[in-house]
Image (cartoon, rainbow, N blue to C red; front, side):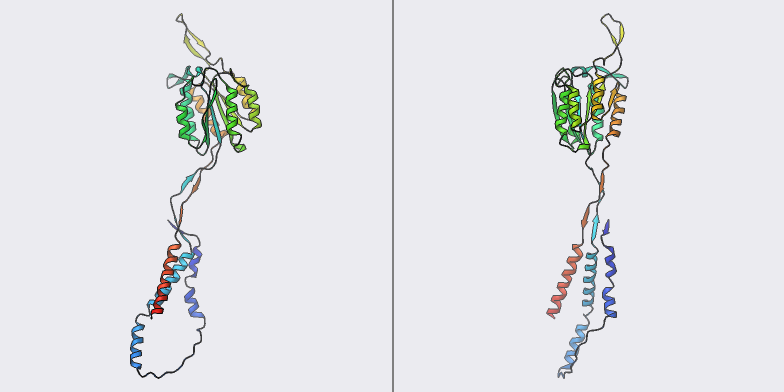
Length: 322
């Protein structure tokens, strides 16, 4: 659509008419002259008078072009969303062998912990528009798979391709926190967030609480999620069904202390629905920024200005030629 920066400029349109009506006419000296070929001069002036309407018309169009250019016409395009800067958010996900345990009930069938994390976390990643996301996978070692990036699709692909046991059979929670600190410490203070998911306890590497103290000093907020069902029916070697606790290795106390030390929260995910609810809560705790609406603008003032200058040039050459 067409819009104007300074529409009040159109108030200048009647200015030449007002000036012609109310300003005094400039005084001119007149002299008499006897011309022997008077009839020929009168005939020439009569022929010229038939075309004198062109000069006022061109002058009016020139003035109109200048006023339109002064009003600054612009063409407004379709409004677009421009995301603003959000959180710098790292995901640290446990890839130890225990992630293969099938204790997460989804739509009537049991799935592995890793498959549930992939499905729910991928949906969470896709919602985080405007955030810089990164991915750390840890087991016996901690690996940075995706540094902080706005490319959410790339982070989601890296997560979907992860396999339990890829990083070793142990669990190095402290090393994963240390890796996240390295990635987040140079980012803006209020946006440093780590979401750590594990189904066990720290069995390798640095001490998690020491790493959490360093994270607190660096301004990194850590939300921890303990994964695994509370109970599971299992058939023993004698054919008897008994109830077991598949999450007996989960160190909830340490995960709670990690969250408390860094100003985050600890969550317990016993099934897929709880995991979905947890990520929804994280969305509330760490909201994404509202996108800004930007309307593309194309300035058009140079077109009426160029036409006015072109007509003024033509009028000037016409008078000189005459």
